[in-house]
Length: 107
Image (cartoon, rainbow, N blue to C red; front, side, top):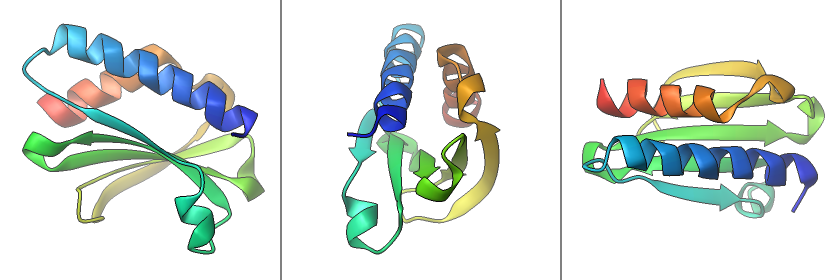
């Protein structure tokens, strides 16, 4: 696993734990795609946070060509994207991810 993916996955895992502690009635699943996208010809890795009960998903994509950035997309299980933003990877924090999860999955 690449270091950027490892670091980001630790942030997301911590955020997921905090989110669950604050929102015990909302289950989420975290996934790491470190081979799937590459097998499809995309030079990137991704982390997904799924809230199956409401059919919403957050996808964090690390493109090889943009090593200092992470694309964060909000969408659904079927793959429809509602919005996408680019962030500096070094500025992503656990609290930011928790806030994003609460806004997207709870609001």
